[in-house]
Image 1 (cartoon, rainbow, N blue to C red):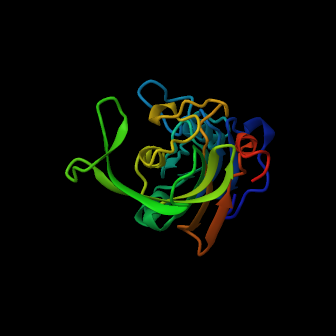
Image 2 (cartoon, rainbow, N blue to C red):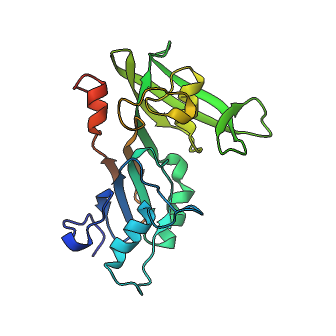
Amino acid sequence: MGIGCSSQVKQRHKPRGVTIIYEDDALIIVDKREGLLSVGTDRDNTGTAYHILTNYIRKGQLRSSKRLYIVHRLDRETSGILMFAKTELAKRLLEEKWARVNKIYLAVIHGTPAKKEDTISSYLAENSAYTVYSTLDKTNGRLSHTAYKVIKEHGGLSLLEVKLLTGRKNQIRVHLADIGHPIIGDRKYGSVDGSAGRMALHAWKITFHHPIISKTLELEAPIPKPFYSLMGGRI
């Protein structure tokens, strides 16, 4: 396969749990479903997007030397755009300019923020229970910034367009909970509403300069159906 978007995925090797958005010799970018781990943990290293896509690029050849390189992660509960590199060079070049990658999320939250558009900033740290929290202690936390804009309100809920300005674990979830508006279905950070059947956070759009070819890519993962239901059927 040459550099460029693949036009067809053979059915017998089609990966389950992810939908391929873009693929070439350097990258594979997918729409990950909620509930699927991005990469392995000590307890689970097979039921992951990484494992599924490694099997896919090897096309069933167990002894294949083909592998994927982790560029970033999504929380298990978050759906949407997830990127892997196919070469070590592509991974390194992406990581060097990752701060310039434009990442847009959608989130449905409880209530409506007092400011319809704002940037939330705090130092984020993690405790022994793996819960991320904001702290005033600069020596303990890492400075993090999340920009948001309210794009629709319905039935006591709001749909936000969220721009990730830094990439910390659980950053969007913690910052929205900090301002008193946790994400629907995010029980870890304060939501008591499970009506969507999932956490309402979706990695929606990504814009970046391809690390190998001289081209800017703008990709989008379709908005999940539960988001439409929460917003009265239209977004």
